Image (tube, rainbow, N blue to C red; front, side):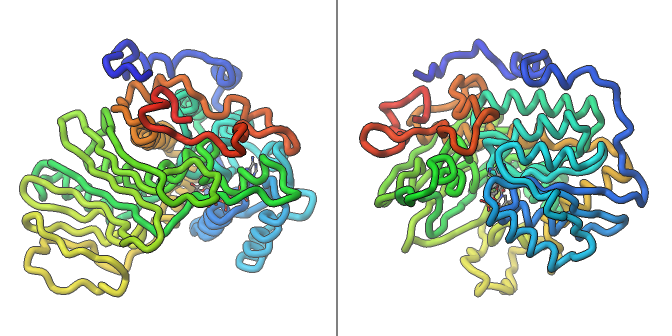
Length: 467
Ligand SMILES: NC(=O)c1ccc[n+]([C@@H]2O[C@H](COP(=O)([O-])OP(=O)(O)OC[C@H]3O[C@@H](n4cnc5c(N)ncnc54)[C@H](O)[C@@H]3O)[C@@H](O)[C@H]2O)c1
């Protein structure tokens, strides 16, 4: 059971623990700083590991960075159709910048190693796989002296968060640049809003609200014949907590992160409600609805609502309310940011692009000029610039903390308990302890129960672990 009075392991202990040596990381410690910088106009080679939608998108962004040559030279995936369609798309769009002959296209659970072996120190690997594999593949990138772009979330539970933060320190010791796909942090409109909030333009933030409510997601119908259980789960990774942290971590992390960024703190505890209403024949582990109250150190709340349900009203926006005014952090999804500041607390509700352009509003105090460039491009411009100029650049600790805070809200909903930052950090439940040893035809870390279903969260019944 979660002991809400347990203060034995504090954030300070956590910091101490993450600076001690541990298995899996010790081999990376104490190495001399190598000459790993792809400085000036030299070609930066990129390998893509996880060639799905976002990995391919990240490769597009990488190959679109100006200021020096960038080439894609290796690709890896566990599913050949994904690798092939990604290759075709990238080759047709970038032709000469895509130099990935069949012998540098790798398949299987070890493919990530082969793709990274094809690079030289100072090159970049994109980790576009589900988050379960992040620490495994990041460990190897560090060993190989590669800079890394990894998608969010970077962890799905407490133990992997501790591990990831140690890895971030190991990457720092090798002067590696590491980016995490919380691209909103690179959005110039949000950066300008943050400055204005820090300048006091809305006064002190007293509450925040965020909504990610859409028509569905994270389901997994029965396994088709001829597909292994592991492949089935990987192909539907949003459905399974060990792979993704579920829709909660995968979808909601951005807004929990952007609100915490504006507030300048991580929340210290969460309580939450949620339930499974319409999962039908889906075998996934998600709830249809989540409503979370995050509490910041000064008592400020972030109220977060997530819903994945057909026929209901959609909203995908984040707001901050201050003692002197209010701010829109996200208007209609991640991009464009369309950040704005209003006098007082009244803001127009923007439900869809049909509501744009916004009508004149006497309460509008400031709005970031439109149109905006994509934050997905800015995050790559910033990473490659840091590599070329050899500037310190490591977002992994921050990304791991954002992932942990997402897990904190998810665990609060799934267990029906208040979960603190320290509790989620020290929660011993590692969802997939042997993820580094998986084989294509071996078993999955998540197995069907005797009822033919995967275990699901049961708040109030399972209270010290989510399933
Ligand atoms: N920043 C954003 O806005 C954003 C948007 C979408 C997705 N993402 C993130 O990107 C990641 C991937 O999401 P996606 O939508 O591209 O999913 P996807 O299923 O389209 O792509 C994942 C790919 O990884 C491959 N893969 C899975 N396990 C692998 C392994 N062990 N080794 C090699 N390849 C493996 C899959 O076969 C697939 O091709 C997730 O972490 C997701 O949260 C971020």
